[in-house]
Picture 1 (tube, helix red, strand yellow):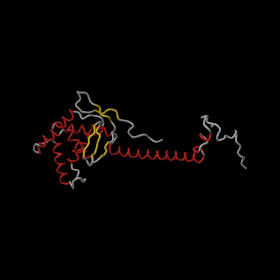
Picture 2 (cartoon, one colour; picture 1 turned 180 degrees about the vertical axis):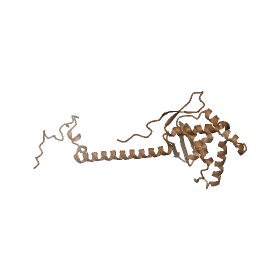
Picture 3 (tube, helix red, strand yellow; picture 1 turned 90 degrees about the horizontal axis):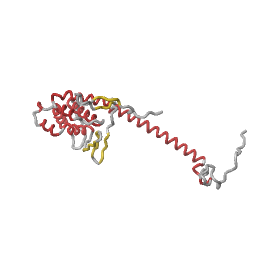
Picture 4 (cartoon, helix red, strand yellow; picture 1 turned 135 degrees about the vertical axis):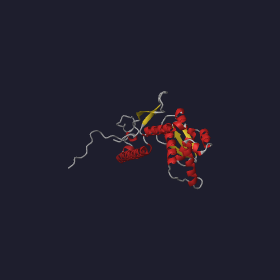
Length: 244
């Protein structure tokens, strides 16, 4: 048989000073509705729901980040937003914008701006067989797009030929280098534009892209070094915080 409840101290009146020492009346302080048992239980349940939702949000964010890393590697994420028909894409500390429908559309614009439109137009003026490999790839990409384009403004796809893959890969490599904090050096671009140095410079951009995706930072070499970038220490902590 349970013992009857006995109060250890005197009963606190509603108009008595609150036991917390605030100086307010008990009814306006810890004796008010927020501190009644049903409300305390409800507040505790609300806090538990908030914590549970926070954990779910965190797990979703972690899953998205892991998926991004599988697709883009450990470098900086693609930063892009669409506003009023324009696509804005951040590259390092610079902002590019245009009416691009897809990310490859942006890359095709980016490589033109990076290698230089004057240089590109000069190459186009030459017979196709005498053009730089980049511009030969560009010619194949352009004709392939023209053969598969649909109605104006509609998305379309093209087969991924060797020229398409090489052109897109170079564009993405140059974007990755610039987006991860390193300006495309004048020396590297000069080597890319030079037919005799192109294959080595192209491979250099690919190695730089691999290192970036693997989480390494790229460091500028000394002036006597023949390469454009050197790998520095890997970037740690890009996998996101862990749950415990």
